[in-house]
Length: 364
Image (cartoon, rainbow, N blue to C red; front, side, top):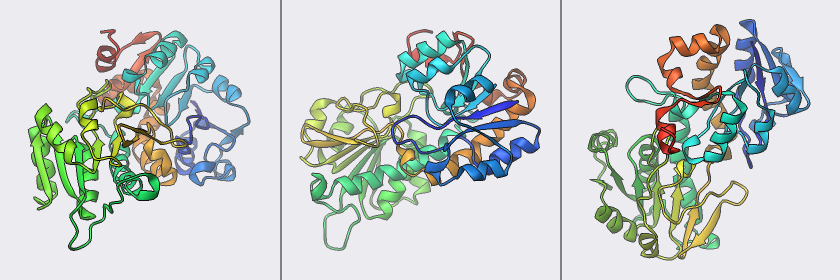
């Protein structure tokens, strides 16, 4: 199979879809890999590194897309990139179509086969490719809160990393999944007082147990009243809820945001699914924050893109087996033989086939 590895086009997205080691594995299996010039530079990977393992460097994306059978990316296509798509081409990347109807429409029109990393699901309900990126997002959210709480950034001037004799910073985390767990773990280790709210009692219990019933950790089943009480007292709110393939509900209202202390920080880490906070709107790594109701909002869709070297390695560790399966067996046979991969199929030759995405877009 001919596999194309384009350079990412989203703002400040410096990750790359396959490392040279991964490319070498594919080439040893008899596949051809085309790499766009400088695709890996942002992740510290030189063009030479790809050439040394047998990849062919391509100067222009138009040539790469037209010659490839499988396109492997990190983030979703930008709308102008969809002009490069064609029937018979397969793409493998993050998509988050449930909150992006324009992209869904463009992919349907192109009649491409599009498999989304975030909807690949194991029999136990886990999301193997999304998981390491969620872990990174959770930790980055605490890092972001630490930065923007500082006075020079417009914050309240509080240090999230606590010292003796000072009241700890209050961090509220909405969601007890992978991102929520990693946010809670890091914030607790830094000395913050952490409240985690989630709809899932079982996940809350697992999180509490995994964090050894930390004395500064509070958990509660989320309700409007509980969220309102916690948000009002929070120095930082981290939105980390998720809906498989769809869009998330707005569980923090504008009036709740208005109740927060001026200079507090909101990190809406589920903005790729529309965001869970009413005052959230998408930002970029180049222009990551805005202030609304006196509260700093950070709503970057590709947070792991800020640490591309770590993120690329973590992503390819879990995505490469699926890439190899698609290349070795061919797309149709790979989807037929691997149930988790088949759930990842979002668009197929002009049809929207993932139920969660279809429901979110009102097309079920």
